Image 1 (cartoon, helix red, strand yellow):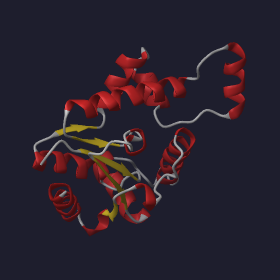
Image 2 (cartoon, helix red, strand yellow):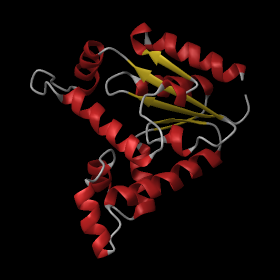
Image 3 (cartoon, helix red, strand yellow):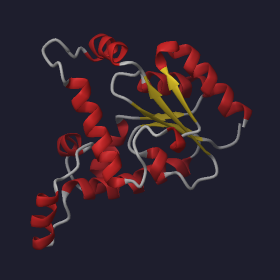
Image 4 (cartoon, rainbow, N blue to C red):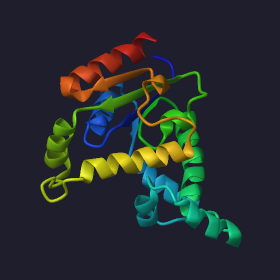
Length: 193
């Protein structure tokens, strides 16, 4: 297998992180997800908590106008600029799996990229969120909807793509078929290329 960049975009609670981790482990390549937060903090000069708070949020037009009038670059724009640099640096190092971070868009012009999208029915995502993240969906009935909306808004704001649109990916998978099965298929697609 030559140098490969694999990006995994996903709906909240769909298992995209677990799929990415297992795929990287099987292929013996680096895995990046939450580590990107630390790298973004170093690149942008912002602290990790600020990065986490703004990582998938877009700024309203009103807030943009206020900042523009003052000559201030809004925090989400600073983070996205740092994200471009960090992801390109990661991709330049060698083969890896990158989860989220608009990686499919930022790295889209590379010849050695494979882009995947992971989704699942809302009920399956709610169950996974409870099991994996400990999110109490009874207490937060709109959590999945809110998380999906934040990701969609951020992605659509900073890219010329539509979040989750199958045309932007090499393949899309319903993780309800099983994490291992999805990893098997992606591994085959990546090794076969």
